[in-house]
Structures are given as structure tokens and as C-alpha cells.
Length: 65
Image (cartoon, rainbow, N blue to C red):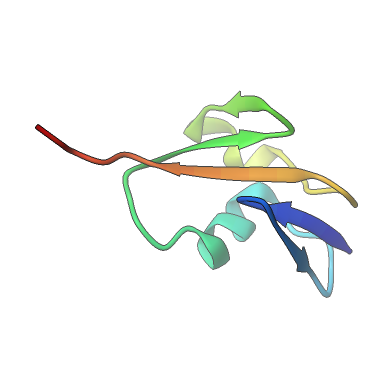
């Protein structure tokens, strides 16, 4: 199955939940998640399954000043 993570094509060997995918791809925290341009609350990560062609954006909070 192929998905797009932060603009890069990724091939997955099986269907994963959003929560499982974040364990693989989220390298920093805190972060927010968009799936197909829709914000997903953390409380719903385990309820979403990824599908062929999904776009997953992991947005990391940065501090500046």
C-alpha cells in the first residue's frame, strides 16, 4: 500500500492504523496530524485506518522568538 507522508511517497507492507503509522513516522513531538487535509484529534488516532493514496502530514511545533 502506498501513502504520502509529509510530501514523500512511502510504501507500507500492510494496512496500518493512524496510531501505528505515527509510531513509525513521527520522530519529534509535540506534533499535530492532518490526514487528507483534515486535522485529526489525538483521541482518534487509533480509530483511523490508512488507505491507499492517503496523505499524512505530521506537523511539528517549533519555538522561536
